[in-house]
Image 1 (cartoon, rainbow, N blue to C red):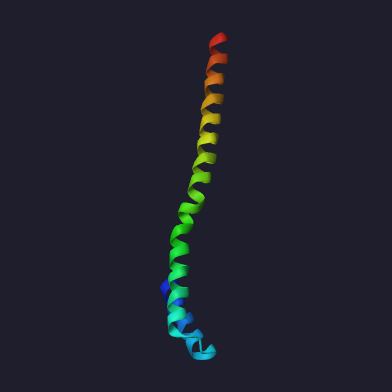
Image 2: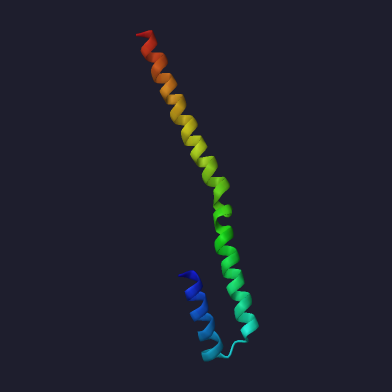
Length: 71
């Protein structure tokens, strides 16, 4: 769908507004580049958050087991 939108939007820009075809191709390339790179932009912070939650959960489970051992 993305490529269909880009193709149709590029045709609209060229026809309706008289934007040069080379500019349209550059804009389409930038949209593809940034939509592909978006995953790598958020991945490090999401991994850190996930690992913090995992460590916190693991630590709480260990504490529960240790408290049950004393009972």
